[in-house]
Amino acid sequence: VSLATGFLFLGGGMRTFSTNSSSIAALLITLYPRLPMGPNDNRCHLQAFRHLYVLATEARWIQTVDVDIGLPVYAPIEVTVRETEHYAESSFCKVTPCLMPERAILKTVRVCGPRYWPQVIDFTPEVTASRAMHKVFGLTSLKASDTITDVHSGSGSITVDQLVGTFSYDPSLIAFAQFCCDPMWYNR
Image 1: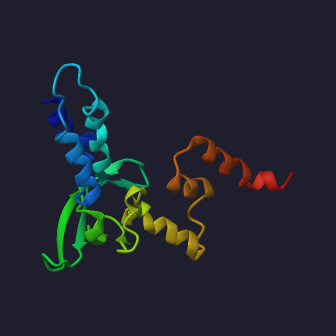
Image 2 (image 1 turned 60 degrees about the vertical axis):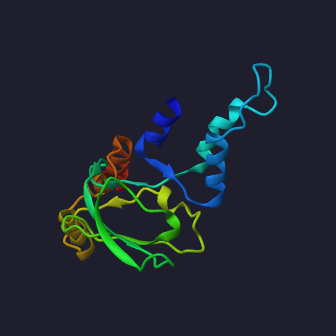
């Protein structure tokens, strides 16, 4: 019963079982051990085998984070799945946080909401073990783009500490920007 409960809440709901052959073999060893013939027979039934299910799991959780506030946000995404021998290429929409299909069949993940800048993550089939699913992809809201374009256009309507505050809320970084970019500091 405890093993079934562990499978149900695998990785706190952030992991699922893979379907490759090594994962299936690890699950078979975990679930169908060679049971002992008697109470003194411990040659074939190792308790460590029941923990091999961890080798069959993979992370498929995707969560979007707003870079302005540093907190997880709900964002609509469009997932495109590759064409395989069993089904044609297809796209479907989800709202993050959510579980994704297997990495081997993922083609692209695109942020498609009107609130955030669109981002596309392409998955190449050769690099199925890539770290793309483990990276944090931050989302920038469209309303924050107005202040950044003012900086690039030369209007001077934003200060350096406001610009640093757009990318980080670390007080030491903001204090460093205020101290080093202050015009009084240059006149010393």
